[in-house]
Image (cartoon, rainbow, N blue to C red):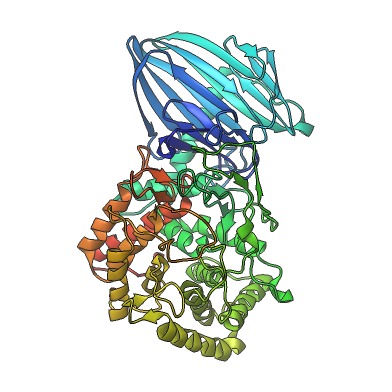
Length: 614
């Protein structure tokens, strides 16, 4: 069982895969070669699942930060005898024209130790456990490092200091004086390609310097937001970029699996996939915190991934593997204890086969946001978008599992109807672009019918708010999206009443917003869950749209206060302790932060907070 707080981790990324580093210098999560590959280090889920630590002996204190404009982590360590810096990164690939983060990743983790004052002794423990801890590999000492054999991949640890091997673990101690350094790297390679090469220290230093430069180039070219909380907005944009699988442009919801929504509970899911629903909100966020280039690539991946099934009468699939894979079948890993004994540990995600009607609106919303950048769509893309609008107009009256992917009985969720309205509304505006002029009458009729149904059946006089599903009285934070997508103006009396009801009755003691009350919703699961950072940022954005700048800023500050020491957020916050819960870092939390900051910034300077981001 791992007990390290979720907030104690920092993210490393090469835009292909990711690692998590703890505050005490241990890489406790690493997947090669993709975000969704089996882990090499998995101690975040089980103490026996592997780690790679570099720790100063007799440490007194440490402080860490990302180097300015980068996702390169620098940790300053103080001991009784000196001060040292540990710099951690995942190497970015060779630069390519127009994309500063490189063509491809070399599959390499870089770690550099340098003593800047006095002298410091370090201990390294290298314990790779591939395939989620199932494999104890064979470690062989070679000139300049260690070869690792076991499973479908080969690893090479470049480490220019003597190491001792004990079974499947390598250890070493090194004593450095001021000005001395040790550069080390872990290199991955598929089995069929033969063993990876051992890197020389100067080569590792060069890769590290190049990675810092690549991140800074990207930040300087792509980030131009001006407004409050700019440091948080810029950093969140880099986090979203770090969660992008560069070959396709897909963005994973989070780089981890099974970090729980309740300590010891069963609400543990694999988030290392790309959800269609993230598209519209992610594109908004990238427009603010990055640039349309990334948004365009994301949409290109998304349109390719979903370009099947609708013509056969199937529902639009809600999520895909980062390479566009459709089958994400879920299974459990019973040999892993889980973070703080939160079982089961799952890989894959069974929600991939659910009916969730909201994805129609998110996909067309993404296309609509990108309309100025998409250029001339090819016939297949036009056909896809017409088919999505047709499906929304024909299926909106069906029950589904909703945005929160409940595993209980399907229902008439308000949010699903709302996003079907978005689908046909955006299709009408895009009709010339997608050669859909002949469908405008039927889409217009569907838009009117959906609107009438939402206003009639989605509002509850008893609740005094729009509710979770038609005919019930339960609140759901997703109703906050109504003004965000333009269904109703934010100053509409019913919207204002819904905002007030959610702020007063769907929040914890810290003022953070729950998705819904688990006691009121049959979501097919046992136990509680934390408040949702995304939903809290939705509240801030809705308040800004309503012209309530002070209230919006206060809500924003409450949510943003839960970033960790290096500016990262998980999905949820424990209501009693305030501890971060859920998979980490969570893309949607950072998306919510960016969009809320933008809306508040626009309001502060007298502009429409819901205005275009282009």
